[in-house]
Length: 97
Image: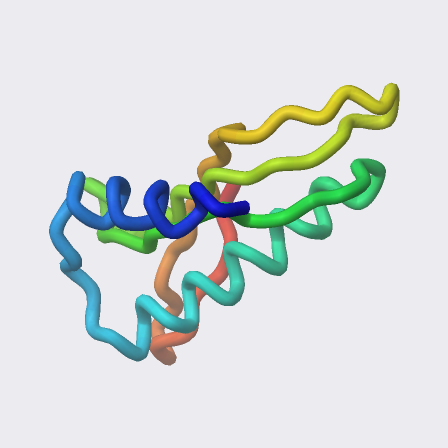
């Protein structure tokens, strides 16, 4: 947990912000929620760091670094995850993968 802010600083520095602040905040929230749902069978899950950036295509990508214990009980931190989103015509975002 103590390293989580450092992980966030590193991934923030790796890629410049390129989304409007409101979209970035919305995508981060949606990405976190989606990943927590994906890992429902895991325990001790926490998101260590997250970024939302434009995808080279027409959408956005949320990159997560997370920690948790798998169903067998093995705890690992620094796990990567990627969630893609497409922007709808009304400006909302929908998960695509």
